[in-house]
Length: 379
Image 1 (spheres, rainbow, N blue to C red):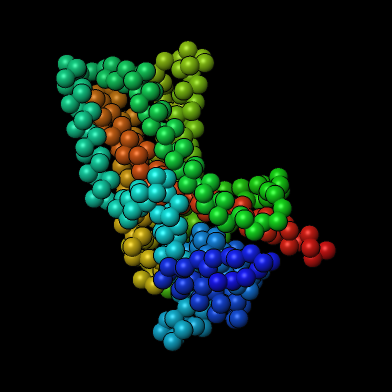
Image 2: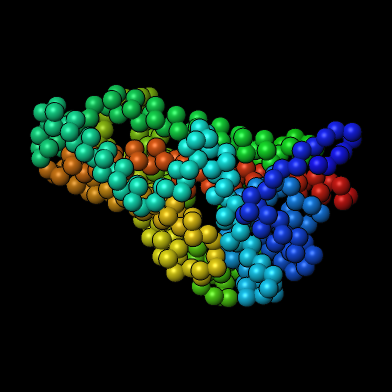
């Protein structure tokens, strides 16, 4: 045990992966060749020792850009075998599991692959299909794009709204646990400049540029911005789809405008742009995930990564098909298929890859605080 200020501080037993991160960071801290790379290295140089909280923080600060791996003189096959992207990815998965709410659901992170999300989507499709058939609805009828002829608006609003609120409460509780854990050593509170800086880094995906502005390493030593570009398509595609839903909700409840909305309307334009982004981005990310150098990342994360990407593709493809064929007899089946994939996405929000954006945002906020404090003390 460690003794400090006459208080007994229990030693936290690190997992095997956390121990690997600690050892790798100690080597990196002695070398410091990558000091000007992504946010991990400036955070690392502020420490001589690495606690479990530090390891969790820096694992989620890592964007797996690969620059440090390809620059490292101690990377495999060197006997030190330093591989920061891989060990960080392993610990990231552990943090998702550790801080999950409920804790017993943490193991789901390892299972949200293509098979599970496909099975869930099919299950919800069959349940919704059965409900529509029991209600006596004509599946092949012409409804002029009126989705509420298949499912009543209030039913959809209550069902999806309650699930959405529940899963974000669970995710928020997990992020709060993570933040409480990693922010204990912050001597000052979070200030507005910290929030602005962290938001800028999140929205621009700054640290997918390798820290030097040239981009990531994918298959070899060449730098490329392509993964950052596909991430932008995916992130902003999702945000545009969310904006489309929000505007449509405002139209319905505050302006009294009922769906279906014209193709020239704001909700449809936003949804079309967002859906297109959620096809381009995920296809690109899936390709890069398959082709990437095997030393990058953790093989245990790949099922979760690919399951999330595949689910986003299902949502966007079914959504755009529904928009294109809403005036045809295929509308009802396409609506059921789209809602089934959306429900699958909602239920996996706190226990799938979607959560990584929030954990990383929390880590970037802590990094912004540390950078501000370091600049203040250097004056």
